[in-house]
Image (tube, rainbow, N blue to C red; front, side):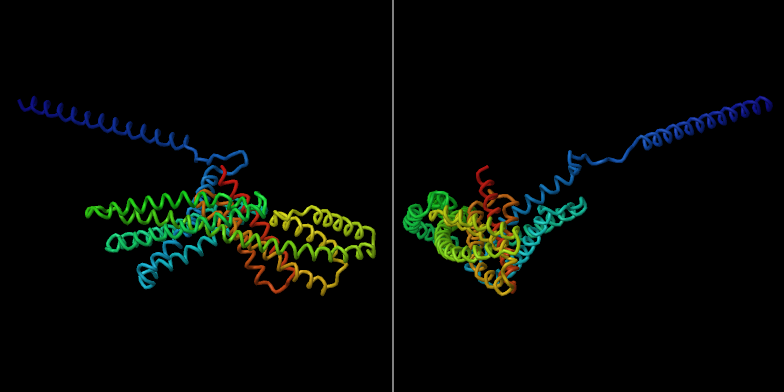
Length: 436
């Protein structure tokens, strides 16, 4: 019996050991197979390569540039809107309670200026590396997002404050008075626009030709919005009165801007007409000087260059159109610039400085007028004008400030001419965007 018991125990032990060994072998096989599978997948894995377009610019970089442009437009519009909002906030709540809003607007303007400068560097003729493009677009995105978020936060705070206030009836009354006062301006502005149409060509006043009609439409919408707010004001449970009043005010303010633009454009045209008459007279004297310099030129090449510039200026003077002062002034200024270049070697330093000083006054007038007209156009269209036009306008403003600060009249003249060129480009791009 003892032997049988020993044999049975031995058999059970052998069976247990065998089962354990089989289990270990199976587990080891599973681990080995899993390891090979992971290694095989890692070997097949390759790092993702960004897709590129035909010019070698990554699609990711293209999306970055598009986003930067969109955010730049939004920030520019947000700053314009915030400027209007701040004025009303100060009138309603005082400067102490609006100090943070004012500081946020100052920061946003600074960030907008830097963003436009970066955009200009991306758009100019100098080649930029891919790294530079990526860094500058990323910087634009950061500046625009942070500034707009700050402006939105400040605007939201005042919206909440307005809702908590009980002066909605007073604000509504102010909006209704604004609509009435602006509506009373329409006939006068319409008469002024008609007078411009008699004196100037349709092309010369195209920038503001539709402003009165657009202002009428906006005032109608603002009046309807104000009446809607008044009806809601009678409901003690209404919670959207402030929003309706705000919308009516913004709409009425846009109408005010359109009418103001007609007045400022009329003044600009008159200033350009005076400048054209003055420059025409000066050009006649320049031609007399140039003819003498041509006849006394030290070599045939110099004489030929001066002669060509003289012929070009004579042709422009013979084709000027009084009804288009801006276009005529641009043609005449270009011709005078060519003549100045041809006469540079014939004039002494004192003559060059005197001539540059005289020419600078007129070029500054042209640059300021063009910038003001383009500003009014963009402000009345808001999101309808893209980043390119706004960037050119910002560069024109910067160059104008540089020209006004320069002490060297020759350098200032060149800078002012560049400012005028950028402002004309901005105007053309803005019109293209508006008609797309």
